[in-house]
Image (cartoon, rainbow over all chains, first blue to last red; front, side):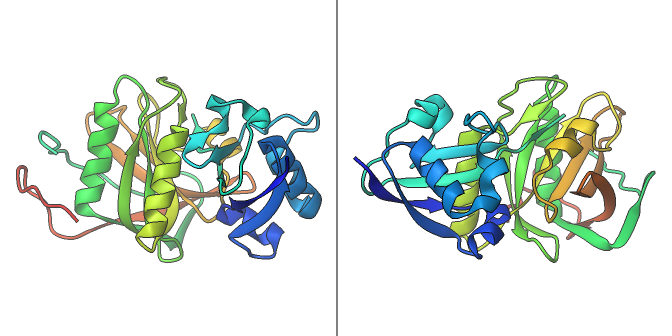
Length: 93
Length: 166
């Protein structure tokens, strides 16, 4: 059952969404939400999902306080009122 | 932070050095950053900086866990990252950079650091613990190119045990 959820965007992704810091998209899982985002804002495509549809390793996706990699990744369900946050992973050597 | 009395040398190094770019770091946060790096040994340590991006002024420092738990690479723990991002936003600032330690190499970004640098406006601070004295240097990384910037430590020296906090 698709619901509308708010997605908080990091500063690096805001230009691709016309400068918005939060956008509302529909979906029943995190995968739906990300695919919907990419279809609405194609500039985000290479930064969120890989060509095979899997989650890009340089992005962290959260439902409320939890990193979806510790949940069910793209299959993590979302429900009404959930807040999804995206942040670039911060890593190096 | 007890036992964090260290002397810091900050100097321009090799490569491109842009004198108009700057990182301004209050002295207590500078010490907290170096102390966090030392306490992470033998692994690399990391943390986040919040403040005013365009002026390069750091207002808050968030020591974070290194999820990679490695002496060669770091990965800011994803939950620590979210908490820091929210706290920075609540305090009217934003994340403007990251620091991490190099335990056995120069305070210069590694190829991995350059490859994974997500934000051209961020300040990338490297703390080298290779020598007796920690060396702190800061960079901007955009499109694979590295520009060094000055690190300015703000405020009077803090004496051990003074317990100054921001």
